Amino acid sequence: MVIQALAQESGLGRAPSQRQLWPAGLVLTCAIVLLVVAAGLAAPWLTANSPLDQDLLQINKGPSVDFPLGTDHLGRDVFARLLYGARSTLGISLAGTAIAFAIGAGLGLLALTFGRWPAAVLFTLIDLVRALPGTLLALLLIVGLGTGPGPLILALGISFAPLVAYVTRATYQREAARDYVQAAASFCGGRLHILRRHILPNIAGVLVTQAAIILPRCIVTESVLSFLGVGSSPDAPTWGRMIADSSRFVERAPHAILVPLVSLVLLTLSLSAIGTYLRRHLDPVRGETDGPPEDETQLADLARPSLASA
Amino acid sequence: MARMIAVSASLLRGLLQAAFIVMLTFFLCRVMPGDVVDVLGLEGGLTAEQQAEMRHSLGLDKPLPLQFVDWVGQALTGDFGRSIRFDRPVGDMLGTALPVTAQLAALSFCFGVALALLLAIAATARPSRWLDAVIDFVNTWSIAVPTFCTGVAAILIFSIWLGWLPVIGGLLVPVLVIGIDNAGQIVKSLREELREAVMLPHVRTARAKGLSPWRIAFAHVLPAAMPIVLALSGLVLGGLVAGSLTMEVLFALPGLGSLTLNAIHGRDYPIILAAVTLIAVVLVAINTIVDMLHRLIDPRLA
Image (cartoon, rainbow over all chains, first blue to last red; front, side, top):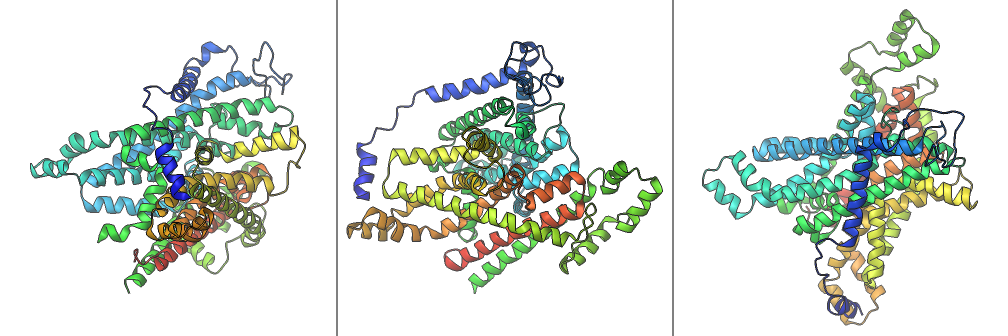
């Protein structure tokens, strides 16, 4: 039966879909992301209201002419907060992703290039930190570094750096074993030269894909931290913070929580759909297996250490 | 022999990880701006001398490494100090909070892994586009939707609009939310692993014998993939911690997560330290045990 089913799946099923240049789903997700970016950039021109002004006579009101999406429990304009929130949500998570890559990919690649010992030290350190789940690590870092956008971005970056570092190492090692790299090394190419001219162009696709995968996770983690009360500051509220603030008033003002919640979920869904698409097209080797990237690397760590060292 | 070395190496690694995390937590807790004396001083209007005296009596004016050694020494004898705000032994407070979290985490873990296994096995036994779509959906859901958003939406829909469940109390909603999140994290890799296990020779033999697809999936494919299932369930733990933190806060469950967060907001560092240490040590212990078991079961690894 299974054979039959498999045969059906492989033989009689729909032929592998012709690669459309712009599938409808991709267009939709890109449109959502662009819309959010535009909303964040054009916030001051799209609304006259401030996201922070409180009007305590107008709390938990539904949509009206003055407040297109109603007001929250402090009488703040939900629409204005949504627009300005797009700015801080994207800003903080982009900066967090950048830090994660600076540490994980930048430092990781340098360490890998400069021989066995720097890489061993760096990855031992990462291995020690990794035992702590990302959210808990970020929480602790914010406790230590203090609240505010700077520590928040740094905490997000550091908590995602191990993931980036593992993917970087896996792709680097795959690439470094290839013949053309060996050839370049035998022509006395300097390590940095080989890294820049030969390895980097070939792993760039994987890294870009990884960035697209980390970005929505950064947004999600930031919203969780905001919900726990250690996320973005009140004067630059992210969508996560809006949901967190309104979560105690869900009964009286469901719109104040649904608006940021739906926006956040749409944004993260779109971003991760784009990430999946990129992985399928820019990262063919890993794209085939289609599993979550960190699982693969951790499994590879767990399952094949002896083979690798033998 | 080689196997024993590999097992003890993973034990050593676990110990190192635990030690490193405890150290990290201690120093992060102690460098945080505004310690508990500042917070209490602001609230109670203490004078500068009273604050200095309080710091001295709490041992906060000693050098950090010395404080760390003191704390570890006491912690090893089971004494985690007293909560500065509530003036109760931290050990007692952890003792009351731990069962709540343990129950929540255990139930969510079982539900999540069971759901993931069920989906993956069903997709293996009866491959269908529809099931694969469900698996994709659960996977994307767990990546893109924070657990607390699902929780808030569940409260809004089921308690307020439909009036089915009481808003607060009851573990059903938190367990479902965390469980689905956990299942999403592993279900896709699980599906891939089972897909590969289907190609194994003994599975082909079983199929040639004419066993039913379900029987093959449960009796032949699943055991072959068991070490991977074990390793994958270890990956759920991180999401379990984040999920419990948010669900405890959202549903007002008096567990470790609520305790830790209240302590963070009150700068009650003995509690933060003890709670995070406890969570980290439990996680490291589970991971290490899974790793050691894996090496004991699977001769290829040692």
